[in-house]
Structure formats: structure tokens, C-alpha cells
Image (cartoon, rainbow, N blue to C red; front, side, top):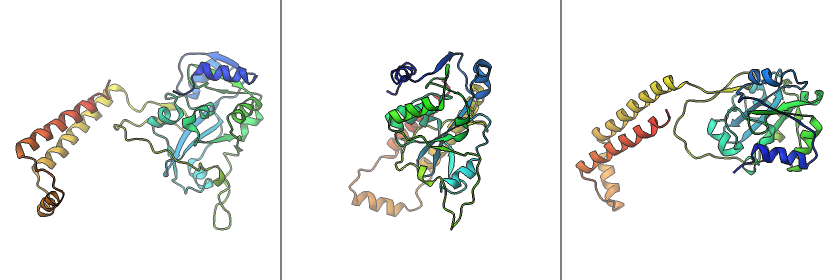
Length: 281
């Protein structure tokens, strides 16, 4: 289990880090958060959870009004223009161990996030204090940069503040300026049932992809597709039947009677349908 909100707050107190906490209803984006703490004298932050093609993960924590161009950032990391994308929702729970809408620099306290690179907006240093979620989006805490740095150093992290709006040239004679911030390790997640993707808008806000009604329609289409694929596999013989038979003999694998094969296909259909329909609930 990862750190809880209460455990994090206790850790901050133990480190004698000054902060103020504000409880509020669950919020999923910066605009909603601003309704409750926007007039409390601190700067709002947006936090992006990204991954590259080699399964390396990044948290980008920036002021709400900082423009983050993912293509430029990808190039500066040495990943090419399309090397970064939003991390899947499953990675929030598996790696950061926080629910949707709770991405925060404090999430690197969890051991599962030890290989996650944290990129901090240098604009945070210009603010007296900034608001972050303490691993839960039903509360916001305001803390200054000195306090954030103290926390990160206490868990062995060296804070890296960068100009996220810079767009330096990258070429043969000009290597990527942020390449040193690429994680040394990668995290490959297990395969999960396909879900409607979660969306993060241009300000780093996270929202659910579809409502339940539209999700049901999508699932129904997926079930039809699964049925079509499985039936086609059951009815259409393999193009290279001789090779298949030869491999079965060589490998001494028992043959499956046609009646049993039909029953097996039907069981697969039932299991696939049940798995996909479970997503609705």
C-alpha cells in the first residue's frame, strides 16, 4: 500500500515543514480547485503524468498558467517529437498509487514511483507558496518551494527546476538539454482490460473519458467484435493446416475433438462478454 493523505501530512509535520491545509469536495481539475482555494493567496499548480515509448514515467509539475508543449519537452528529453504521451489511468494506481485527478509531486514518496522522473517548473520558485493535492483531491495544501525541496531531499530526491516554456534548438551539435532527467529504469505494467482513455486537457486537468451510457454502447460494439473474431477463428480453417498438424505431432500435443472445440469457443465468448460488461459497473 502507498502513502495515505494522513501519513503524508504526518510526514510533513515530522519534517517541520510549514503548510496550510484546506478541505473541499473532490475536484478533478484546476478550475474546480480554484473555486475553493483560488483566493487563499497561493499559486495553483497543474500536474501531468507522462510516459515515453520505453515505459519510463514522468511527473511534470507546473504553475497553472505555464504552457507545456509536450512535443518540445519530448525533444528536450531526447525522445523525439512524439516520444511522450499521457500515462494510462492504470499507471496512476500501479505506480503513483493515487486515484484519478490526484497527480502530485508528493506521489514520488511511494517506493513504486522510485523510477518516476519529477520535472518542476522554475516558475514555482517565484511564488510565495503553491497549492498541491496531498495524494487526495479532497484537500489542497499550500507549501513554499523550500518546504517542497526539504520533503523531496528527505526521500533522496534532488529537485530539478526547469524552464518548461523554453524551446532550445536540438540537433547534432546541440544535444537535448534535459536528457539527464530521463529515468534510468522502466516500469512495464501488466495487461489490463481495455478501458475508455482518461483525458487530460491542455492545463493538465484530468477527466473521465465517457459517461456510463456512451460507455455501454462502446462495450456492446466491442462484444460484437469479439464474437466476430472468435467465430471466424472457429469456422475458418488455418491456411497452413499441414504445418499445424505436423507441429502438433512433433510436440505430442493431444488433438481436440470438433465438439470440444466448439464448446471451448462458446466458453471464450461468455468469458469475454462478462469481462467487458463488468466495465460498466
